[in-house]
Length: 154
Picture 1 (cartoon, rainbow, N blue to C red):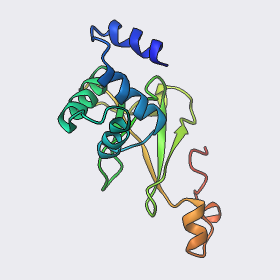
Picture 2: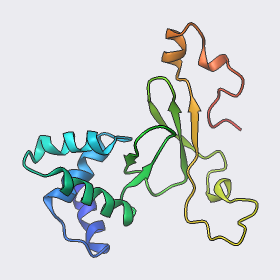
Picture 3: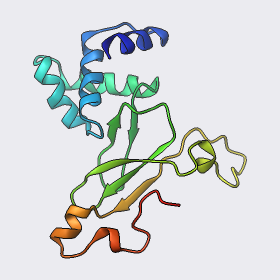
Picture 4: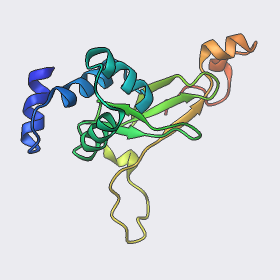
């Protein structure tokens, strides 16, 4: 992945640095991580890197769309490297587990508003608030038996 990331960084006019590559590797290896979790993972490889440096790299990589940041309600932002497609997220409100959910339409129309009110839509995030099967089982219920529980189903 390092060669792919290096090429992409250069195509955005960015220098290839060990800090940028370490952040990309941390997010790639730990999808849907908070900035705090990414700091911990990056410091496994670069123990002297500052928190500020990691936050600056996260912001820059998000701005050039090499990373995507999304924020389920009531949580800090989460980062992922899956930026090249149209997908959503299922978020367990009990344990915080996050799973990617492919768009049932498969392309941008499922995120196209029926009325833009004169605005240019830059992005859209859909987060399904859910209870995962493991949490439902612990609570004595079954998430898959709940109405509308097939997340992403038409």
